[in-house]
Length: 178
Image (cartoon, rainbow, N blue to C red; front, side, top):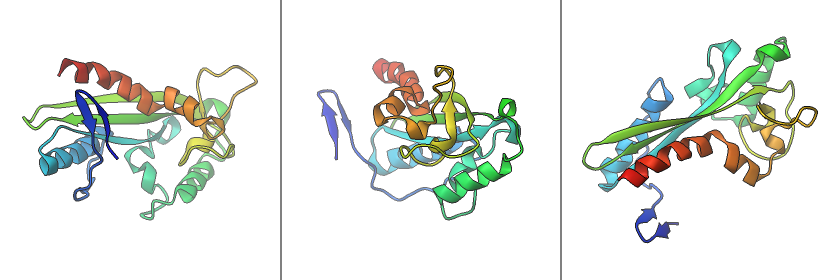
């Protein structure tokens, strides 16, 4: 379904799925945006996102969707990450969600923006909302004693605070300049 404004129309991509073989979020976002722009002849936006755990050197990172194998099993990914962090104390459970958005224009211009949502990881899943790693991610900046995982957030709370919201706020000035 397309959403329109007088000067902008957003259309879902229905072309061939490119192989995401980049080793960074930016590389994978650019692969997808380039493929969409080439297929449609239009400007294209694409996102690549994941969770980065400091004590794991930034992993799962670009491999977040496949952390437990090639099935893209969100539950298995979450359980594997919890198992890997089982003996890690709270001060060392820092992490952040990253969203990288690539904009590719038909004339070949490219821009990449990034949004990060810092926090830490809980010891067990909580909440029924969100998806992926949301039930174990506790964002920074919550009131002490009332910390919640993103799995406990409403859709509106997540949409206004998330790594994607932060990346899109970086993208808006680029789009306005076009």
